[in-house]
Image 1: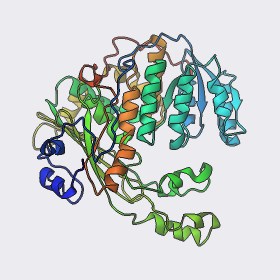
Image 2 (image 1 turned 120 degrees about the vertical axis):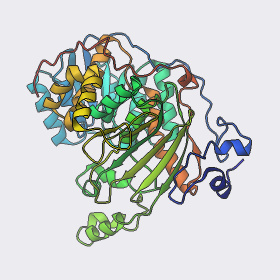
Image 3 (image 1 turned 45 degrees about the horizontal axis):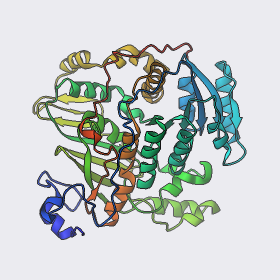
Image 4 (image 1 turned 180 degrees about the vertical axis):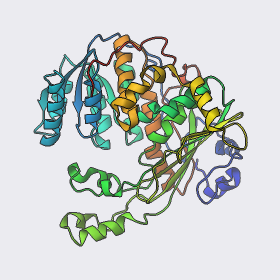
Length: 474
């Protein structure tokens, strides 16, 4: 049972760039298949949900005891949580002595006395095995995220994982199944869901301002070639991650806020995607230049690097469409796009400034301010100014960490669960698969086991919770 690409082009209006038009109702229909059947003969898993983690409120934790694995990006989470009441930082783990030293100074200055785990690649396991830790933050190279999270949940810990949460579909299923079995939260800490315009548009969508949502766009377009090629990054993992099948390696920054606006996994779900990648125009040439001066880079010459631009399109069960783009090598201005299209209005953030439209043109700055005042959600009204003052990607890092700790302390469901972590991260391997198959459609698994039909949307009302105080300044 296979999809013929020529037949798919006729059925769906697939363009040469890999874009799917609205005429693509479903490639399955013309083949006599249902959307639940596997694509290209692959064995898509049928998940029987053991316990629904969407909307699950774990028991309250008065003082959230935390361990951190990875203190590069993880240092942002250390800094944010160290400012909050009801937190005890119990452990710090990293293989790099300088990162351990910096985090230790930060935490001790805030009155914590964490134990240090370092010296070997398995040290993190000892921290996960402790009985006096409730939450493990994981901020390591991408290919370590899922295995560490599974181990931590298996040992009774909630987990907060940096993005993306997994690299393979198997890992996505492991996160879901372990979270359901242990009833431990598995939250991918997607900070863009807590950026202020994204929260504004989410609340506007909740209040019906856009009408029915029909389309969304997100991206990660960011000139990061120097970071990828930095030989001082541990084990040069960023460069290694850029080698192999081409696809969208970092989809969740753009996708997460769009999924929340569309209630993905909570009333709608992503059905399938089509992905197309251009070739590598820059990375290998740059590697050759570096290799001529530095032996370290010679083994990376002529490797199959990810292409410059990947474009992926997704169709949901309700017939909505999502466009995602990824390019970190071209000299582009930073953009996550964040475009929302509804039947009544639209919004667009990038390029700056953020804008709202209710017709052919953008509303005036005065009208925008009025809409902002009307639709700013309670979480931003309460914590937005302080979050911006404390900082971290403009304040969204702090707001996200405050919200996570506040939910755990008040026994509230988290804004992101294991199904979000799995489905948003699944775009990494699925986009690679689609590109490898000549931009053929690839089905996106239903990680909720069907519960998406009845799951409730993310609650951003702040009617419950919001009690956690900031007791230190950064």
